[in-house]
Length: 342
Image 1: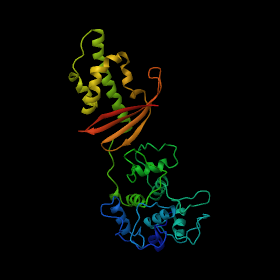
Image 2: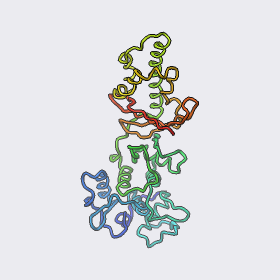
Image 3: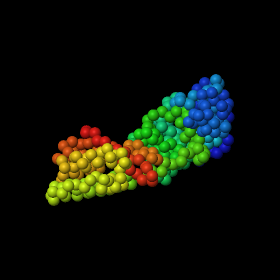
């Protein structure tokens, strides 16, 4: 049961304490107006949740320790830190500056130790951060977010899903990873906590279709292109008729591929390479036989889908593929496809 009373003064003023800290101040010398986390840091300082160092710095790039996270959570939730049972951690005694906060969050089941230790000076990893905020703010996932480095059997999988589903921590767009083992910085933890406290600080969700949509889209694209090209090859080979100019069939390509990829890859292939493939044309379209398909990266206007085509009697080797799709004029188009032999 949570004790929703005003937090003790030590919790409010001691957050992020390593040596003497100053009272909450919205002006930090190393957090400028154009800093990516400035709004959230200012909000938390104004709420009395965080404070800076005596020299006026906030040190946003420093790692957050587990004891500092306990102080922040206790302050942000206004937990009553008095009369809590001893947490019983061998590495936390009553003389610790964060003792009351650690006892409170442990009593609430928000931050737990391991094998009798709290490890107060260890950095809080991003995976642990997800678990802490999910427990503190009772977050639940209402949608699934695919991260390239998070499997369903990962210990913090459901916590990360809850955090991402609430648009509190969305991962790294450049490679679609969450990086759960990396330390959480002071700026990151401030941003995520502000978003948990106040939805106004949450980013607009990235609206991209599901993985199943892209799987179907790429499969449909390759089937359509294979069909139109095979028909032209068959006429040329069996009926000794010339292929129609590429311009007569390129609308089919433009339905699924960007102008650049159509011009630079498919047009030369149709004109000069198609005759060499003939009945084996299906080898040019590996997606339908790929395994382990997943998002490699994902943003509002670009996604990268990856997977591996296993070795067969036809290809003689497994190949890892990446398909890049971009959102143009309301349509998802394949802009690149690369294969790397394994």
